[in-house]
Image 1 (cartoon, rainbow, N blue to C red):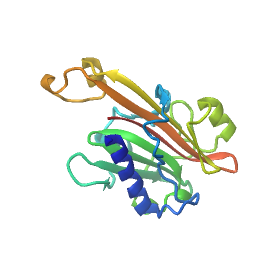
Image 2 (spheres, rainbow, N blue to C red):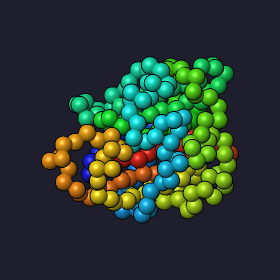
Image 3 (tube, rainbow, N blue to C red):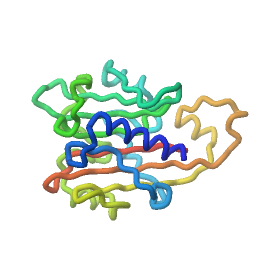
Length: 223
């Protein structure tokens, strides 16, 4: 329920920022009601959760600032355990690449890569030398690749979104260990985590225009 609640909050934010009109200029994370039912057992490849030196569920806003520079932070919900969003554009005004990071408490859990055509609030994004045409996940996912190539990498999607989008959602369950806590930079006292099972939700959503990738989101979170 926590993950679904957070998903709704993120969708609500993007609705407010984009108008969520349903056309290709207003895409946002899509979470169907069958979110907890239709997940594929497993997880998205770790090579796709890394981009420009940032790794989902490991790195924090501080890591973003160190690599990309200072930026404005958009708070998605009130309270100390809130989702936050930051975005960056290229220093070259002729380059319309945009990258957005969303974090839950301390770690980055989502990133979105697209162009200014699909993000109407680009004037709120900071400029960074790291953002440029051709940026890609460590696994090679980048804007402009064909839909056929994309689906050859990920296989049959969990869901088709409209006529131009695909979504892949994964879930795996594991038991926290000291090693996992260190990996995810979780600073908890021993009394707070007798080993317990936790669900890791991950996935990628992509949208295409004329058969080429123009918007994609990768996420990894737990609940």
